[in-house]
Image (cartoon, rainbow, N blue to C red; front, side):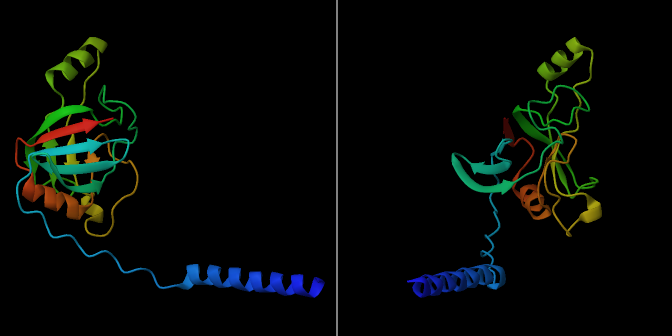
Length: 178
């Protein structure tokens, strides 16, 4: 009986060791096939701050979704300059900057009159210069910075901003949800 239990324990240990070795040294799965580039202009970008996702739409059809980074203090809406928050609400792309200190940038029309009035009532500046942009030019093409690191902007991978640059014209609606 003891001999049988010992053999079972050795067999279980061998199987467990094999599984651990397989998980550690097995070849990685092949990367997913790249998606074909989007070519049609979009009419809406939706940003879900909690999920850290940006989704592009043509009409009611979601075409693609991308991971994002936000301001360094992303909880809640932007209320003043320097708070590190990303605004919430409905905006429009109102400018394009090919010479940004980040790899391309699409400006949104923040602050709007209600943001200015609320900030003025508190005696502070609402801030501004909120963009959807790529990575800092210092790391362009090398890596995508993880986490929330902007001053309130929406950061995406360089390949993503290059695609957005092609398909998001001035006037594209940008909805930013908590």
